[in-house]
Image (cartoon, rainbow, N blue to C red; front, side):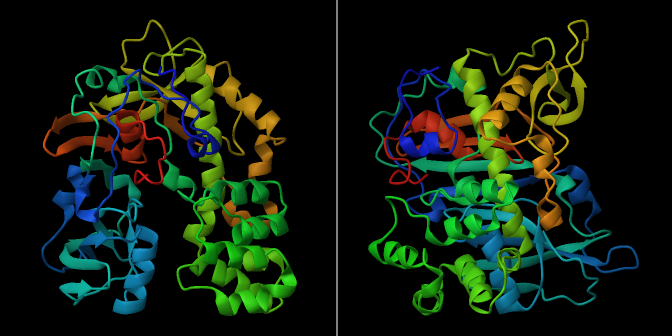
Length: 419
C-alpha cells in the first residue's frame, strides 16, 4: 500500500487509500472520447443466440450501440426522444468515452430500422433474440486508454502489483466533480426526503461554475423555485424535473419520483457504493490481503478465469478456487464472522443506520437488499505501449477502469486529470 494520501475528492467517495506502492506516472485521461475506448464483452451464448432475421422464435431486435460524450442513461433518453424507440442496455457506460455495446428492446418488432442515429449515438441492427436483452449476458468490458503527458512511461514496477488493487467504485459512481449522488441516497435511506431534494438542488463543490453556484445558491430557498426553474440550463435535466414537480405543488416524495427510475435508483446504490469503498479502505488500512480468503470470509467460487459463480463460505480444506466477496449494505445484510462484514457493521453504526433502513416503505422501488461484490479488481489481459502511453485490459462487469488508472497515474487533482 502506498503511503501517499489520496486527494480530498477521493476520500469524500470513500477512497481513503491507494493499494499499490507505485509512485505514479502522472498525466491525464479522457482528452477526447476516442482516446478512452470501451468494448462490451458478452457471454458466447448471446452471440450464438442472435438470428440475422425475424422468425417465430427470434422476435426481439438487438442493436450495436456506438456512443460518445454521453452516458448510457442519457443516451437512451436521447434515442427515445430523437429516434422514437425505447431501448435498454446491459451496462451503464461513462460519458467521457467512445463505447460499443449492445442495446435491445422489450417490444416484438418485425421490421425495425436497420440503422438509427441521434446527436451522440449510432445504432446498427445486429439481428433478433428469443428474449429481451438481460444483464446476465454481460461478461465484462475491454478498455483501450491513452494517458496524456505522463511524467514517466515505465510501468514495470506497477504490473506486479495489479493483483493487489481493490475493486473500488470510481468517482463517476458518485457524480464525479459534483460528488452528491450518495449524499442524496443517504438522506433517502434516512427518510429525510426534503433534505435529499435540498442537496440535489443546492449542493456545490469547488468545481462548480459561477453560474451553477448562483443557481444552486438560489435553490436553497423554496420561494425562489419558480425563478430558478426559468434560469436552469438544459444540462441540469434531473434538477429541472424535480423543480417542475415542486413548483406544481407536489410533495418531496412525488418530486423525487419525477426523476426517471433508472436515475432514482442510482442515489441509494451510490450510497451502498460509498459504504463499500469505506469498507475496502478500512480492510486495506489494516493490511488485509484482498486476494487471499481468510477464515469466516464469504467468497465467490470461480467458474472460469474471470467468471464469478455462487457465494460459498471459505473452507481451508476446499480445493475450490475462491475469491473474497464483500457483502454490500442493504436490508438483507447480516454481519457474520467475515473480515469485511465486521467493518461494514461498524460503518453502518457510525452512519447511524441499520440494515433494515434500506427497506424504504415510502419509496419501495428504491429499496436495496444488498448482494455481493468481489474484493479485488480482477484485471486480466493487461498490456501497455509507450509513445503514446496506452493501456489495454479487461475487467468484469461492474468494475471501473478508473480504479486501475488512479493507481497508475496517482493524480493530484482527479477531476482535472479526467477522472
